[in-house]
Length: 179
Image 1 (tube, helix red, strand yellow):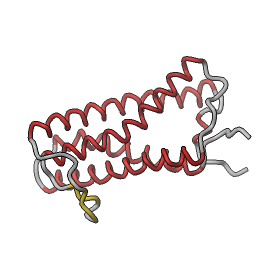
Image 2 (cartoon, rainbow, N blue to C red):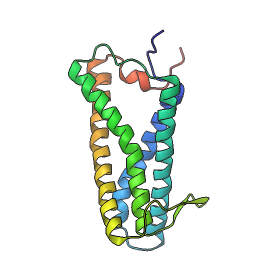
Image 3 (cartoon, rainbow, N blue to C red):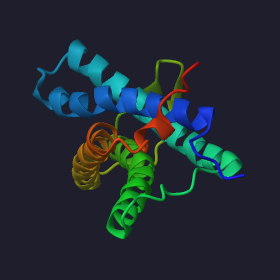
């Protein structure tokens, strides 16, 4: 039997990831402009904590995909749409893992302790080095920008399928409706 839509677990993890990304991405850019002090520190603590959650969600998404699989590519896609879709999804998975790891390593090199929701601390991923920290933070920022660009394309494609093509592609990731 061919799976027509994503598993409930895949859908839940997808939408949780999306919800957190819509907060953590703009916050990451806005935090730099806040005056130094307790509010900025709280913002960075939350940014790092939610970044770690994104890393865990990405790992869980890969595990769920391995366990439950995913639907075949929609048959109505053109070859170009299929290639772009596959490249976008693979790139997003890679960046949802790489970007938090870059932030973790950059913060470790800075050095700042990374406390996850004040419950536990992460071990450092990189040696203390101001130069290394600057490079890793720049890479973290570039990766975040690439995520934003890919998300704009991903959301645009989903809306095109939903509103223009009306071909059911987006519905495969929406919560199931009760009849």
